[in-house]
Image (cartoon, rainbow, N blue to C red; front, top):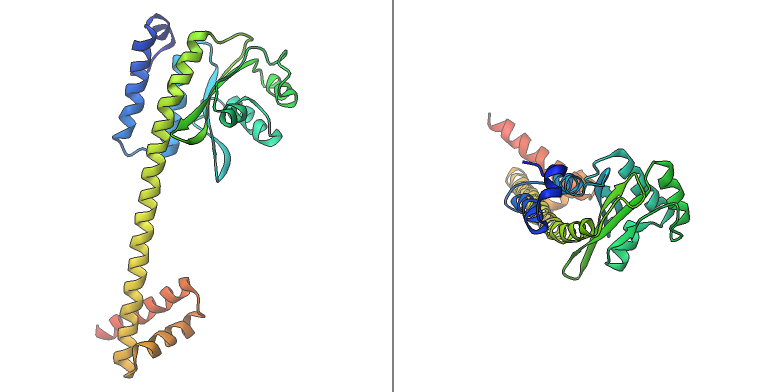
Length: 245
């Protein structure tokens, strides 16, 4: 069950966050991808912070800066503007590993170009908390408001604690996806090795040649490239199978 805003106002902070964290922690036992996990994180924070008109996550890593789990097109655009202009509260939160709050984008001087563009989107306030897992900064969790002064001290606590939980979730799901990709790549490499070995055996038996000569024949058919080597080997094996029919 989602945490509705009216209910969120009446719950004590600890109880309110326990509901949010229970939903997040449930993902650790599921087969969610990073994208779907962050989608739920964005939705939960949007529902839990009453003044928010949108929420989402900025990922900052070796692959670049990008948004995920955005609950509103304005959130996506406001984030894109931060990346394009290389300034804004989410980038500052991730770089400084600290909560960044802007009560009024019309009066805050820190990021003038981005603030003007965000105001054109109808956004007047923002809070952004860093996603930190161990010694790694993964990005930032943020909420946007359509009015100045939309967020309270309580909201800042909710966002900061939610970001800490979300960082563990992102680190966990990312590590699981990385392990899954590595496993898939290993299986593909093993399959490629097996088909090349089988093709060499076919050529050795068919032409009465040694292993090195058989490999040289495959390489000459493939042009010496890894991908086409597997294709050449597959063609030899398929040809042998057809001959047996």
